[in-house]
Image (cartoon, rainbow, N blue to C red; front, side, top):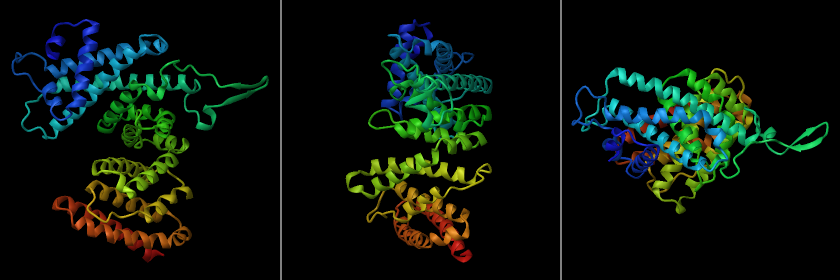
Amino acid sequence: MIRKLIFSKPTLASRAAYTQLASTLLQVYPTSCPTLLFKDDSSLKRDSKPFSFLFINLLLIDLRSSFPSLLSKLNSSDYPSVSLRLAAALDIISSFIGFLLRSLDNELDSVSFSMPPDLLLRLRKDIAETMSLTIEYLRDRWDASVAGASGLHPSARAGTSATSEGTRLTLTWESMTDSVNTDPLILAGIRTLAIWIREDENENLRNESAGLMDMLVELYKTSSPPALDFRYPILLALEGIMSTDDGVEGFLGQDGWRIVAQDLEAILRNIGNNQNMDGLSQASEASRGLEIVRILLTVLDHHSTSSRSEDWMTAITSASSMKVPSDSPPPKVLEFQIAMLQLSAALLSEAPVSMQKRYASSSTALSGILSQLKVLVNGISNKTESRELLELLEDVALDLGNLRVSG
């Protein structure tokens, strides 16, 4: 039905209908629906463009034509429906990018999918252009909601402003009904942007995305599930952005380390009190924790990080007080706890000798946790997974051993 609608030159109403239908199907059936929606259609003529190319191209055109005038509709009655349609379009594009990556990695052996290189290059160019416009809209939308200026530190965004004529409220142009942190279009935009800049090594887009750092950090801090949860998409976006100097500088300048480190401590507490969490919830929390550790290690290792704050060392204290599960936890939880040991070892190795001595007791505790984790990892039934985690533990053991020798 969706294919027939697209080929029949649909009206605006039918475009909105098939866009939201396709997005919903992809969310309800994330495993089977991408194949049904994006695979090649053998009934088409050989000289016809693949359906997925036509479909994605239509969505990209809709997004590019809508973004320039969207902010002016913020307080109109049309905005909620337009926002939902564009959010659905972005979600479909996210799913298509994932499908395309899996097909290129030969993970879809039973699926007939191919696209001529020239069409792939056209899609790449069009997606990049659309992501650039998405960044512009996100920047404008955020500025309109907080203070009308980009890059403001959190301390300058809210509250009042002192002038020669007295103290006045800070000016904003926020929507009267739809706040920025409940707008599905903002979440969908960040999620699609995150997947694209993580997989496509486009330095220009990554630098443009670094200009959203104040928005990303603030949305991360104010995410409150079960409402819209921006945290994981933002972490994926940061993974791509942190390859740039502006990204690392902006992250540290906006208190990004402190914000995500606080979430890291909350994840450790949640997993430690695992009697209230099932295995799936533990694995989900651990996955977010792994992304945080990757970001912090990238910042720590980046050439533009000239100084290390002592506040960062709280991650070592948190790791040294981790509760190692007594039973068999999901492998993702073990991987996360090993990552915490890696982060702690990296922080200690970068610290001056005097600071290393102050954390000598923490180093001993980390070694004890490492031994406990090794027992659990050896008990994993999947031997390939077990072997990979044991290799990570050996690397951490070597790093901690070198610290003791140097101390």
